[in-house]
Length: 196
Image (cartoon, rainbow, N blue to C red; front, side, top):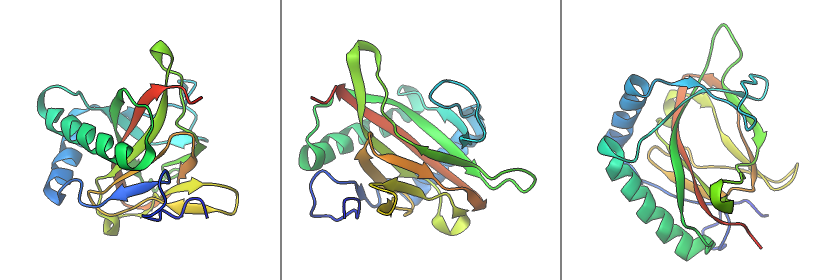
């Protein structure tokens, strides 16, 4: 099976537990909710399409109060990539704070199946996606990040509080509807020259 998150299969999706402490997760959720000015998430065409994607997002700045987080992600991504994916990477593109909520009077938040691939300035592309789990999995239901190898071969990313999961950006994946509570996460993409 392609996406079983086995720890001995180089190049396949993988995760590290305890990347962030519970206190760091709580601090980031508070900061994200309180100071980022969350906006309705848009799809790849920069439009709002609630039949495809429904959530709120904000962007963290690499300077100031979040510099420590960008440094830690940079070190972790370099180490995981060197040991695991071996992609030609030159940096990572932004850091998105995402909120998926159960909306009692409307459709619950979700993100339908998609890929993270994007052509960026300078001819670089997204190659390696990562997700950092900021919510305690006991506080919400649904909101699973599901990776697809085929219509019958899937795997869910780690829901462990503070974990970071990595997967190739060309992987089709979705976030299932949140049916109770709120799921917070950080999402980012490491970039490099196009695959050849």
